[in-house]
View (cartoon, rainbow, N blue to C red):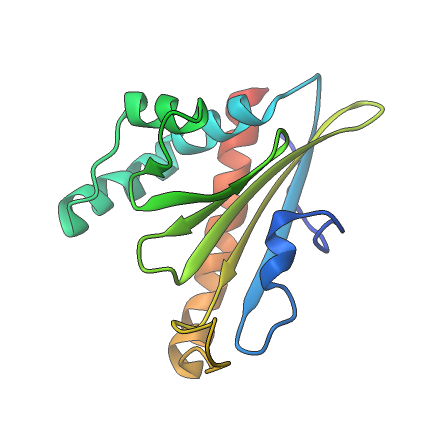
Length: 166
């Protein structure tokens, strides 16, 4: 099983836009796997994993934000900017930055070739509601209470994708 490690954001990470701003939280985890893995394959394995399937089910039932394999295929192919509760905020050949429908969180994916395989990055950002106009703080109690769950869930999601890719 691939080891999931916490890391600083790479210099060229699309998630850097949110790093270090007042009231913002960013994180970055990575796993290195043997072989050449492209971004589309990584993101597909991430979103089609069993663990994320539970989240997709909840989004469908609770928020009426359904998603399926065709919607994921269209988003990955650039034919659509939407997948479930997210829209594409930015993408490059090796990175994808997704924004949730409330514009409160971001999910970021990146692949980077190494001498022994591919480094898979997954990170997120939590931003204040009106982050473009004022640097209001995320409600401290809720933010701090949910953070351990968020960190664990992020590592589990990346681990799930890495297992599917091995």
